[in-house]
Length: 267
Image (cartoon, rainbow, N blue to C red; front, side, top):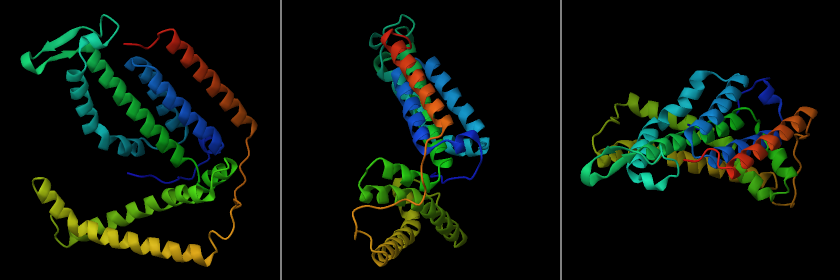
């Protein structure tokens, strides 16, 4: 489920877009520095605290995570069988928990690494959602302008952030309309599900083409491409709190790299 900006006045909302992007990069790097799930659990708890600080509801967080639960279970099964004890460094991770004959063995390290992958996905999904939820589109565009990116790329990013939630709402409307007409979406088998979703995909594709044509006409009428630069209405500026947060992020990242060099968080 794609999510759009939600108005608010929390400390996270008041941060500059550049600061929030830096924060997302730092927590993602930290999540991939450590293999032990305990360290990634600390990072995940920190991200959950940031979500609470932003004023977002737990229901919203549940809507983001619940579709990933089957993927989490598959990751646990896959890593448990794929990574043998010899793949890890610590004695506990090398321990074999279950021996299943020709199917192989389930190692403690495989289970722990599966938990690490789950927590990494949680951190990235929740962190990126927090960034999108608390940052207006205008601030994103202003940040792209400051970054000296080509305006075509800035337009593509801005259009994706703006119209993907709109297309999602239209998809839900089409889905409700087709259900009201008696369309059955619970067909058994892959072929059956594909046939069931054809009445939904056809109007969605037609609506997407119509939206792109309207957008192209609007771009031409406004002279898009006539000049090689653009000016953002929103002025982005770092405040004192942004500098403090960025300094704190740099310290946290340096400590994480130092711990990785010292072998902390390995399996």
